[in-house]
Length: 254
Length: 308
Image (cartoon, rainbow over all chains, first blue to last red; front, side, top):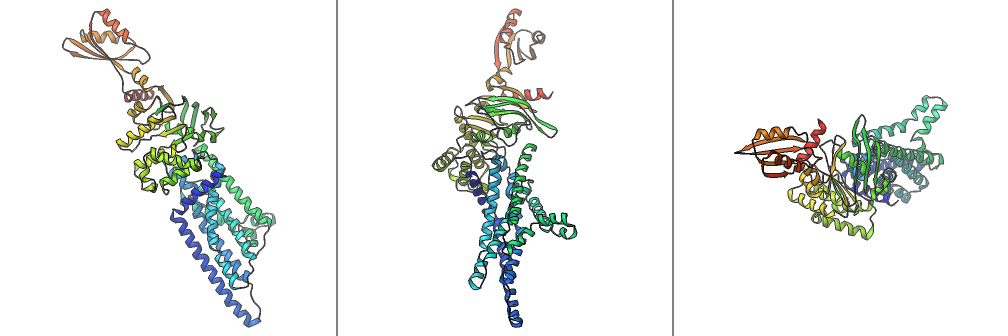
């Protein structure tokens, strides 16, 4: 445990002394701010028209929160590979991996240290966007439930992205390749449910089941389903397991 | 302290280490020599757990390193070949990280970090980013991270590469001072360094151990004997050439004397024999000087012998 914490701190050091994290943070906040503002503007326009014509009103969750979370998840799909690409690839390229492996730490501690190091930066990214739900709660009648479940969903999904990213980073010395591969695979896992529309039930169920996006939808609606949580946790564990195997194989081969 | 037993390493089709074995006792400074590509770095990487051997065992303090890697690594300080460091860290932050990852905590950590900063002479750069350091300072930071847990075993891959003469001298003194309390394996290309610092030498070539001895023995055994005799040169040459133990002879005329240089196989003591022959022949012997080979000569001899 102690070693994981030490390695996590080292990753923080690495992240916050490089410009990549600041760039990623900036872009993420800029885009999510833009999505939030435009969703709110659109919502207020539509609700004014709605009250004029039929006296009803729109649901804030459905019109602001759901699309915002959806948009943020796509931005994360693009940005998180940029955080994971360096984790192992940079150590390999600079040769520091050799020294790191000569220290009395186990592979599991090494992988978890890097994984949680990246997760902690990701959590910081999410916390910085808390301003949006708080604003809504402050000025309007908003149900906070979907926001909390939505953020839980973002955390789980983002961790799944990171777990895959850690694995890909352990395969190569080249950070660009790591980022591109991670993004490509994540996108594939994201849209694989499209194939569900083209296939018959046993197969279409599988495509539906392994898609990263289908498990996220419930969270944005305020629903916590154990099946979704189990899916993401399994995805994370599988990613970390593959990373361990990759370290082991790399050792035997190199 | 360190036992390498029948270790082989394959990289795909290429065999980098062929069944090598050697031992390092506690307190020894072992010079690990060999031409480029001989397998020095491969051996060191196996010792430090970067990759396991394809076959054979390595024991550190009696424990098999593949079975109990954490135990072995706790006793280890390693300075790899190209001295990789985290460029974005300051010297002090880096040393603190290494100390804590090696299990040194709290007050002891502070003390140890201060101690190695002092020992390695990096006090004036301790708040600088590692990427801004000169090569000499980088190398010392590398040595400092190896020493920070006060390890029983130090494995140094070319520690003085790229340093200026003064720095080389200082690092050598530092290593020399470690003798007795620490076990050191030192790989280097600078052969005078070996005779100055090391208590024993292992020479490997093409993945095989070709010699293992003290630097003194290595150079003494492979020396030659110079004699100055009052006798015709041809006679001396012909006579010694007929003796199988003499591997080579070179003669030079000096007025009525002859100076001869005799090379012989390293396993035997040949001096009494030479004197006896000279006396039997009735020649006058004026000088007999055993000449030591330099470590360079021994090295080149061993390495080329193997090749041919």
